[in-house]
Amino acid sequence: KPVPVLAIDGPSGSGKGTISRAVAEALGWHLLDSGAIYRAVGYAASMAGIDLSDAQAVTRCTETTRIVFRDPKDGGETRVVVNGHDATDEIRTETCGAAASAIAAIPAVRAALLDKQRSFRRPPGLVADGRDMGTIVFADAPYKVFLTASADERARRRYKQLKEKGLAVTLSTLLREIEARDERDATRKVAPLRPATGALIIDTTGIPVDAVIAQVLAVVQPA
Ligand code: C5P
Image (cartoon, rainbow, N blue to C red; front, side, top):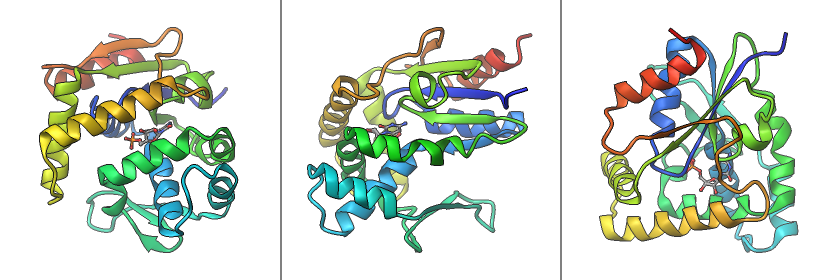
């Protein structure tokens, strides 16, 4: 019997990260933060001074970048180690989000990351957070959810998250950056952001986190 996957896709700030973590915890399943992988590659390419529109150079960089998710000793946030350097905080900036979105539009980069993402599918199950979890990477997933929220609300959530991390941002700049990133993610030729066939679409605008978690859990564990 194949290992079950719950695919959770959606744009930035839709609540995917928070919801995926909580649902994985509740189910006792593994968690894949695929965005962190794209961010790590964007980070590595930027650090190497690679022109992000140079598809060949970025693809080579993708193939050689070592990305390790490390469980924190103190129960805090999962550490993301890129080529031996703990880049957990650096990859969360919107600059890195934009770099991730740029390199994510390169087909060979996406192809090079498929096996790594699929290797997270281990018993008893996987919650996979991203843009193309239900459409491409785990197209055979038995459970699929697509989270959305208004652009204003998504910008406000991201603003709060980044502020909590002590990063300097303004709401209006963030709103513009997020809209530009979503536009690119939704209109790219390869693996564009869109709900998978059969996905439960949840608009989380104004809905408390606990209520969204309950709705998503009900997809896997119907009452
Ligand atoms: O989810 P997060 O904001 O961390 O993702 C950063 C960027 O990585 C997205 O804007 C998108 O361009 C890219 N991404 C992707 N496919 C995924 C996950 C993320 O293209 N499965």
